[in-house]
Length: 296
Ligand code: MN
Image (cartoon, rainbow, N blue to C red):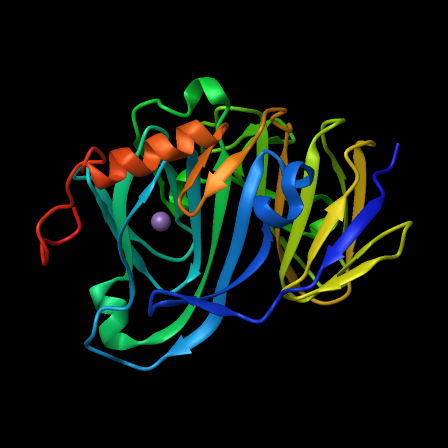
């Protein structure tokens, strides 16, 4: 059975995250709730051009608890450091899958080299919820380089599909996830068409980063910056690219648990949010590495 189009989200005006990331928030649990579960938030940063500079661009130390942040860089370079002493720099094609879980402090900046050179920045940050039983697990990272992420050629020379997480055509994705998730990075050739099969009952969202794409049969069309929401029922999705197009497909089994969120904390109850704030104020999220220390 074919999936149907449930909605088309048009990007709002961008807002700045720190002084480094002009982002459009395509969805958030606060606005869309259970409909986007297991996902919580999607920010699309850029594409935006930065002049060469010397001042650090980004967002300073802040906490997270109760979920994962997944950062996918398409252009430019981002460095992060966290209270566990971990960190790194990711560039085009790389993904940082950070499981904040029980809690981290981290910062996120343009890399020093990218600040100096300037140029185009484009990235996506996705927040993925954790089931209640894992919200207080120890934090950890998966640093997935471009080379770690399998790329599969689509039939009929329609384009390529990178399996960041989940599985496509027998190819397992690079990331380990707590709940079933498919996160696929697609490039379609103009005029190319592809038939995808996805698990019944999963949430399915499709961000068109570049170009124009039509969902065949229903005929709904989305262009760069827009996000399509597909029905959970049905397993078949047929896409046709009107132009060369780049897409991010987000699929996942909904987590059927209450959400209580405030800023950087997403838990299940209000009491857990109060606890998160108290723990943060009391310094129980650890300490950042000293200022000026290089990213590991
Ligand atoms: Mn963050």
